[in-house]
Image (cartoon, rainbow, N blue to C red):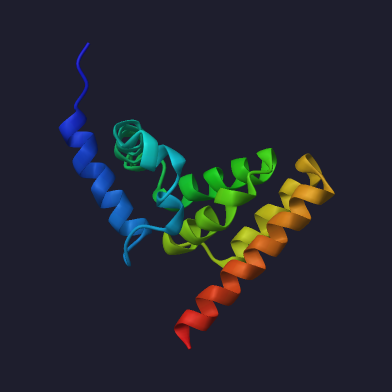
Length: 131
């Protein structure tokens, strides 16, 4: 079996530019990226180049799904990043708030409240950057 790595790599770069027009997010600097940069790069090529670039589902919806998964598993470290990605991809704070309300039913109070706090932080950063 062969894989179109070069195609996925090019698409991964396009998705990264759409989600992070100002450059890589601070979370791009992590232990995996430092200690195993080839694996970190390959993960991004696969995730962004194959899946996030697949237009079967639009990028906004994929970012919202990723955000919802992170809320569900309580992964605070990446949650604000993906909320920002969802907004960059076209989601609104109201849309994310609506999804968080729905998630409350399924994931419970602590994770939902933490997610609302993360959204407030993201919203405040975006508003401060726009002023």
